[in-house]
Image (tube, rainbow, N blue to C red; front, side, top):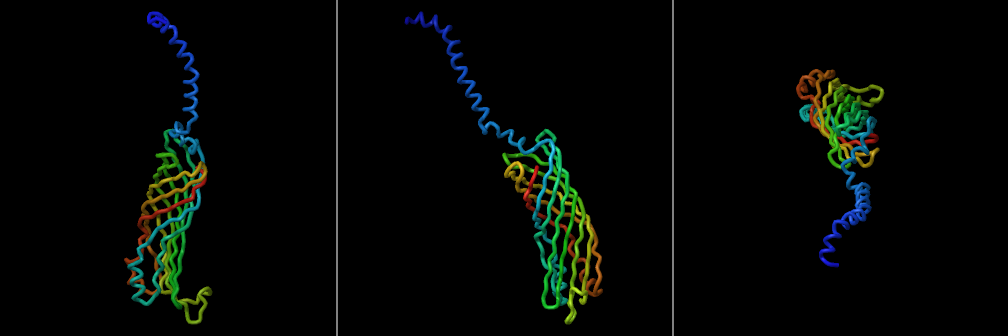
Length: 250
């Protein structure tokens, strides 16, 4: 075939080549559409519907400053209040997907625990419990990783008992000498941030951390001399906290 002939045939062969390649190009498009790599940006849609609910059990780490109080109790020859850091609880919520990669959830929860220390006839006890209403926003940042932030508002009760079991007495029958019984009702405010690791579309691990603010006064009864010494040394209920939840649902 001469160069002149090839030059005249090229315009005619080009459409035939494109037609022959069209099925292969279409097949490539289908492969790309089915490749999970190209669906990563839509991964969040598998875990966030128009509405739903969720929740689960949780562990909360929170400490109270008892150094001042326990210093006075040791001076008085009494049993110090036991330090407690781990509290058990749970939370649940329901919410709506806004359609802009933002999920708004509303719910509530609670936590609590108690601990007692004994030494001979002396004993001390600490209790703390609280419940709250919560609002938070959830936003997908990576595949299976969601960031959240919100605030919890509620209230609770804490108490401290310092007692001495009477000689040969039964503490369960009330045969005790009360050195101090202190109770505090408080209002709770906890702003927080968190990370939600989605193990699947129905279970995950939720890590939260924030700061606890409380407001409330201690009401005390017992030995007046002891109460005068510990005034101003009772725990104020404020401080950082952290929690982890096994989350089920949305």
